Length: 208
Image 1: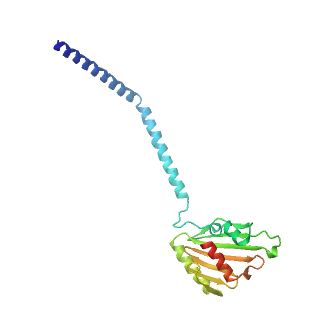
Image 2: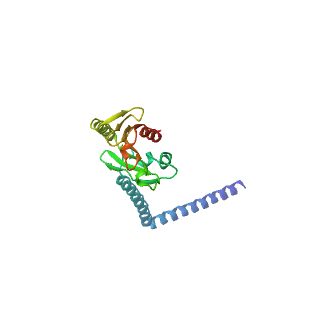
Image 3: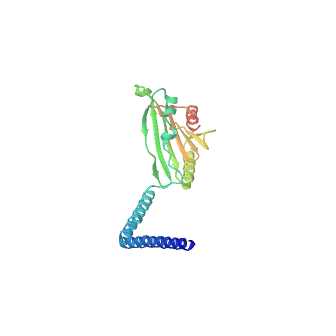
């Protein structure tokens, strides 16, 4: 009885072994027959991945890279702040993207009120020169100091890192972090008629 059972088990093992060998041989033949297609498919996948990597590298290299991002003047002087200074409604007159030259970027932004009398129209404006790298930071400090010594100015305290009022054109110059900001405010027909105190008020509102 046991001998018959053993022979049945041995026959089953042999049967399963034959089935497994059949499947293995079938797989080998399939791979061999389709080897060319597999190679082509793998080449397509690898080629597509390589192309995607090259495109990503090209896009990355085509964009300018800065240690410090250029500052948009209208991000410094926002419409909300302009409304606080000029009234309920304002008109954006000058709004541009930063223009980069060597180590610094320049940008301007200005607003006016809606007074139909041009002679009495009020305006507020900023010009921003921002450093895009450490050389630009040093250049801003040097040029700021040079402009200060070459003009008729009044030193101003408690605004930015350093500040002065240009008596000739009625503008407030402020060195703040990596930025040199020039503030203008007043009657558009007489921009140099504003006071130091009013410009300091504008600067504090913008730089808070």
